[in-house]
Length: 287
Image (cartoon, rainbow, N blue to C red):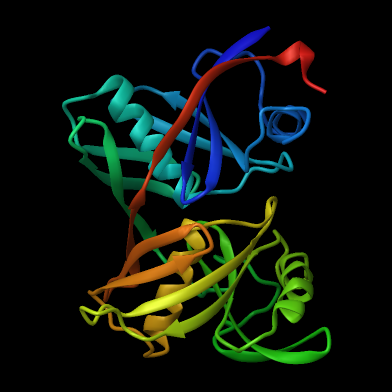
């Protein structure tokens, strides 16, 4: 069986997008793992599936390990580019149903008419243990916990996916050990994305800036994570490190995102989406 797909990336976080409206099978599990394998498959960090309709679209995300996260910020921008470029070339606004709720997305088109950037509402961040979720009865906000070889101040926040955010300075060697340890820790019963955040000096125009490195559940160290950048800025705003209602420039390994924390605890993400290529995959030939 051959299936058409389009490959996209958002700051190097790459996805295979399929029209899943009439498919008689699921992509979660072994099929996603085989598709995302960079040696015997197509290669990607995850799979995006379109279900619903153009007027009422739903995005499903499957990670490279076959697991299904609630949301993916970089994937959402790619999904919006697909729908608007392929099915609604005169529109700029789109409401997308996700595992994290209904999210409003606003696109900006380039000179060629194609979508170049997308600003997406990311919903409310939550520190409530049941909403993150974390295995405790009180919120974990800038609290010291034990990790291999040291202690670390950590904040747990849900931004569609569970996240653990730290602003403590760590070496590259420490980060390589702590990221997987915390992501799989019993503190996070559904696993978590772990953000290592460094406050940078402001840009030339005074824009606040952060550096964020993310160990992402289901993917490992990633070029970019939209929900992770959002988590970092929301926590930074709560701790008084960056202002609310002003876009913060977040540098990830793959490039920059703009994240605005709002006074009500919600956030907006703005960043690029790029089409890489189109093709067909023979599912029977996958390794």
